[in-house]
Image 1: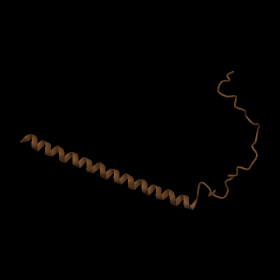
Image 2 (image 1 turned 135 degrees about the vertical axis):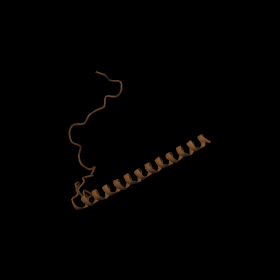
Image 3 (image 1 turned 90 degrees about the vertical axis):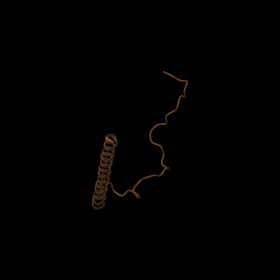
Image 4 (image 1 turned 60 degrees about the vertical axis):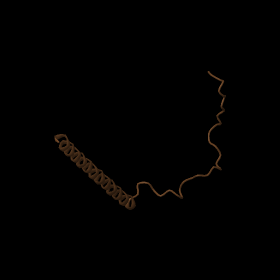
Length: 78
């Protein structure tokens, strides 16, 4: 009988601890979401990285710069 009561008390305390942990996890996720929203508002007002969709030079038609490097292959050692 004492073991049943002790087991019930232990089970109730473990469920309470799990509930507290879940509440803390939910609060942490809300905190992270609020911080992300604040950062998004800041970035919208003053972007730290300029919008470079049209500024990037992605052309491959340019001549290579410097001198060509020849690969001697796997068997050559110095």
